[in-house]
Image 1 (tube, rainbow, N blue to C red):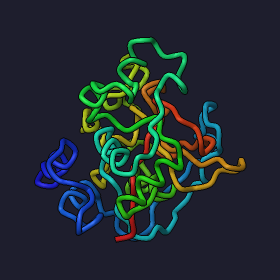
Image 2 (cartoon, rainbow, N blue to C red):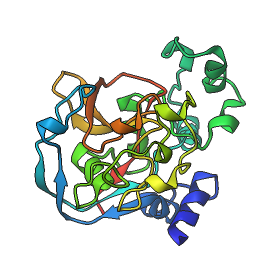
Image 3 (spheres, rainbow, N blue to C red):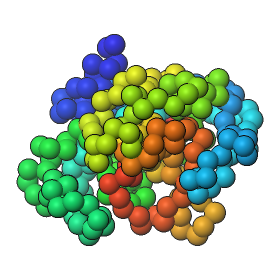
Image 4 (cartoon, rainbow, N blue to C red):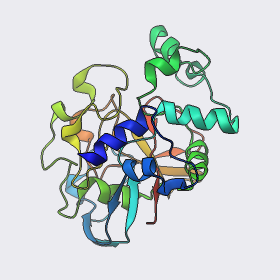
Amino acid sequence: MRALVLLSLSLFGCGSNRGAGGPRSVAARARMALVPAGPARLGETASDARAALELSPLPEGPREVAAFVIDRVPVTEREYAQFVAETRRPAPPVAEFEPSLPAEVVARRDRSRAAQLDVYRAHPAVLVSWDDAAAYCAWRGVRLPDETEWEKAARGTDGRPFPWGTTPDATRVNGLEAALGDTVPVLTYPRARSPFEVHDLGGNAAEWTSTPAPSPAHFVIRGSSFLDPSSLARAARRRERPRGARSVTLTFRCASTP
């Protein structure tokens, strides 16, 4: 409970993820979960793979994964805005990348509008390319997780298909069934947390990893978004995107070696 209170404080403006302690500051420790070294059952059999998958799942079986820490929730718009303000890294408007979105969503999402941060500050940071995500993590003194770290954080050590258990559950994720048509604040669905107390690993927005994909200049993404049915919130689901891709359905979180 104390960790979640500190996490909430760091997400809503009390404390920084940087400072003299870098990623080991109080706020950063509160927002990162330790995943100890050891085996984990990752991947799926061919029969488990869904037609919507763009990449085959990892081969099913135990894998030894070194210890790491990982953000309990994706990086939020408030946190990313702090990075943009300090580094002056360009933050593109949503209309350039999501022309099919309704006009009211574009208006809310456009980072050039001063009111945008008030509306979305606790939502996951989206419209972020792989290079943007990697640069943000480096700014914090950490890195993007690789896909095996992401999957272990989601599944624990027992190989559960979903972060919360063995069956899909539309009440635990912001997916297609919720019909919201947009992201929601992080921690909105606490019952979807993984065995390592990592949140938002299914639904809302998929996430970049540091793992290169088979296609040149592409990287593996994990998780599902608000446009996907809850059945696709499987922890083993793998897709790929060009490193320059930006979407309201794609976000990221950071990791580090403890």
